[in-house]
Amino acid sequence: MHVAELVTALRPSLEVVVRCFGAPREEAGVHSYGVPTELAGANPALTTLGVDLRIAQDVGGADVVHSHTWYANGAGHIASLLHGIPHVVTAHSLEPLRPWKAEQLGGGYRVSSWIEKTAFEAADAVIAVSGGMRRDILRAYPSLDPDRVSVVYNGIDLDRWKSVDDADLVRSLGIDPDRPSVVFVGRITRQKGLPYLLRAARQLPPEVQLVLCAGAPDTPEILAEVEAGVAALAQERSGVVWIDRLLSQHDLSAVLSIATTFVCPSIYEPLGIVNLEAMACGAAVVGTATGGIPEVVDDGVTGRLVPIEQAQDGTGTPLDPDRFVDDLAATLMEVTSDPDMARRYGAAGRVRAEKEFGWDRIAVETRRIYDSLV
Image (cartoon, rainbow, N blue to C red; front, side, top):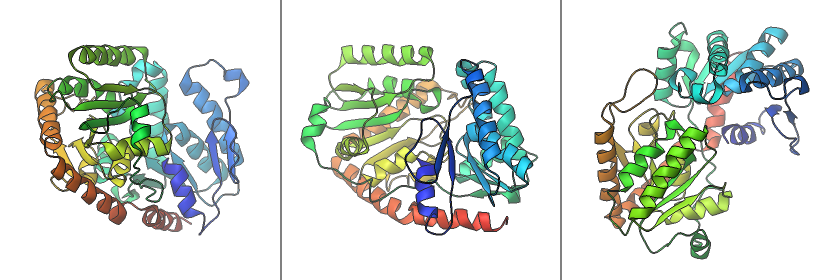
């Protein structure tokens, strides 16, 4: 999402060629790369490196190469070495702060961590998507020169993401638009904190719905944990709605627009574009006070922040999980019990999104970094 929107905002002022993973795209200037046949079925970290090598070969002639996430960092780093061009990295997350990925990648997690570390330490410029992310980068990679690490926020397309009034659509998804609701949107992964939310939801008043737009589990284990939590909750209360398919932008906007509050219970979140999407749709946001979330959610103005004390071992695990669950539940109850306040939060969130997170502003800041390197 970040790359698609950033490219659109940059193209009026410079030529941008996108080299990406996956199926062919029809968009002009976008080239897709599949896994080399020789690596089919290999560890995901190795298939990623195979794609990276193909991309790096084709980057010749560019003035700057800009990579996003460890998947593409290898391509950017190798292209920089091969073609002698500056490399810019945007950090959306950090491998040292996602140790649970070892469950998903096995030894490939050590490979992904090596790729990221190598690319970051050699990059000509590193962009963090929040001040919290910048602090994490410098803590994870202390050899980096702080002057090379800049903050450029994620953004939101304010024309596409806006309030959508479609009660019939919402009902077709199993949601009662006349009942208060707490809406979660995110992948089923450790960092998103969904098991903590399921525990907190047991304390919500019976009239409050819990709507989970959640899919793409990292591992069978985390999926099984969430399935068990949802099943147990559904036995205790009505209004538990789990949408495990990817909704269209219009449909998701309609769900966010009827939310009494959106919730982001993440234990690791560099910024969270989904919080901006909710704000742009006029939803109040309740989020964990971690990572870049406090830079998006203005506590007491656009929503509420839930305090958390976390382990410093890279997992982000709450030091007192029960307290975090109780604080999350209390904050959700506070917001859902006062719909007028929730509406004020939502209106203020839309204004904040317009003022601080438009892609035109983010493109200017990104272009400034490019210009400083060529």
